[in-house]
Length: 265
Ligand SMILES: C[S@@+](CC[C@H](N)C(=O)[O-])C[C@H]1O[C@@H](n2cnc3c(N)ncnc32)[C@H](O)[C@@H]1O
Image 1 (cartoon, rainbow, N blue to C red):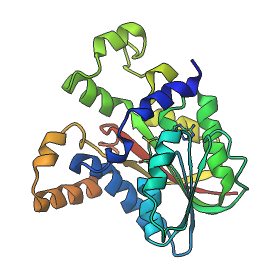
Image 2: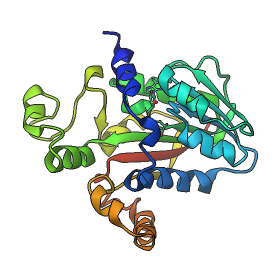
Image 3: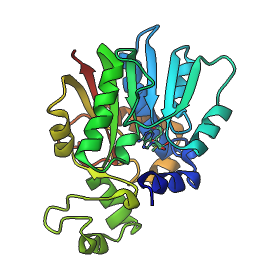
């Protein structure tokens, strides 16, 4: 099977549009937006690579930013288009994060790479996606790159919920039997990493890290509790989350991480 076909089949049957709208799912969205709002300036040009159905792209376009979006999967593009309001200055192009040759160098102030790195399985592909994101971003521009973190997923989907059979993953070589480091292939859909893998990837690029964030922390692990919170408890939880999500002693216990860096050219 073509490597992208696993991904297309998955997103054809997955409600990506709803993923960030539950209260526990909103922690990832609110956290990413919190950092974008800290960095974005009036008039900034924005691109989202792997835009899905456009939750971030549309939110920023509705604030008045001009946004270009790129997405691999046609099904997500159709929903992205349906979600577009007439007043938005937004484009969506079908394309691959590995080859953004339709986009010229140094165009964007803010580049969002929130998703493709979940689905790239070799160091060379991950570096290529990062290289392309850096190429189209202006010097001094800011890139937001997100990852799926293995320990958060293993604790939540594995030991806690049993959706991942940890023993079988070890047996199949998808998890190292001693370190529990993950290793996956396109048929497994998701590439799970640890911070040390991200640090290693980023070491060769001309960038300066601004923030490294445990985007959703324990929110998926404790989703039932979060969904039951009343508004004031949820606001307190978010205040706690924002004050702790960059603490080095908590960074590994998260389902997603957000690496925010500025480009030096
Ligand atoms: C988990 S969704 C995230 C969507 C959105 N960026 C968000 O954070 O809500 C990942 C998206 O990246 C897209 N994607 C995966 N690999 C890609 C690639 N190589 N090039 C472009 N898009 C890709 C998927 O089709 C999917 O829509």
